[in-house]
Length: 419
Image 1 (cartoon, one colour):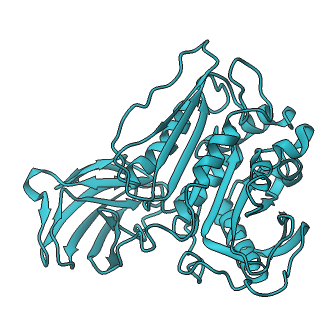
Image 2 (spheres, helix red, strand yellow; image 1 turned 90 degrees about the vertical axis):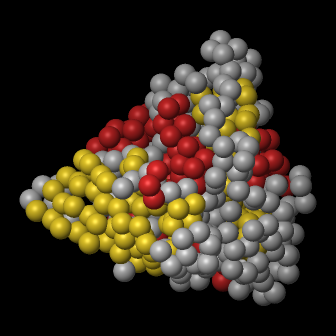
């Protein structure tokens, strides 16, 4: 297992995240790859082979390593897993398993897949400058482009697409959970933080977070924050899951209760530092428990998506937003219309503020947090929106020059028409 780059890579990633920088919203791929199980490449001879590949993305040559299972069958729909490297790591580190070799290839998942009927295709993308800054959404676009190529050339079960990564790679996996929840079935984030942005971040996706109590590079509070995004999105019952005592050199895995069917949230805390491969009792390496837990998590989603239409169709709600801006400030007047056939009771409206905007006050709703991905919750006098009825809310915000509007809204998890 490659170890030397972990700490320095994650420190640099954290400094990058503190430095900030807006991540532009990206449109979803034209093809909703979750709409049907079989990809276009099914039934044809494979158009790609195991090894390194180069693809044009965003005007740049980007590379990835592909690992097909033994005895690839063009008529079998395969699970697809993207393994993202840490900062100063490489795609080859993920694919090869580093000093631990095959046993740690793709965070130990390739070994487990090979012993479970060879049902998984693995991909290790290479980040620009060995990182995942995702500037302007370029790395999410890179994933979109890889998916198009892979699905055209190979037989993929499009309801079984996963991502996972450590540190900066965990941040990239989280960015995909935010931006491509309709494409990826689940993600596994090892010791991650919000380092690659979160465009969207309001839809449910199965989520697993793994983090060490004494992580002195990306504090465990950062991992908890990522987890809590999907505790909310997935409708799970909020809780403070148990975590092991410091000095115990053990781990505790908690599956949240109350989550939407098919969208679990799992939190695995361990008494240790910044590593994806802790071993109970001390040390780290491919014999870690994390591989088995991650494999168990992603393989629970067998066959087609148990909730093939997870998001209510647009049209159940409509949001209009009128902005009045001046130097350094603005007000936003939002009208929420219930265009569906059922009342919206105890409603929440989720949206993402443009970079540089921060809410300073609001009316007819409570707002949390005040920047980034915001959730507006009803107050006592407007707790229900009847079919055909509207509710008006609003807020005042500061800005640093960007007076744009949120591009999308969800009401109780359902996408709303805008305008």
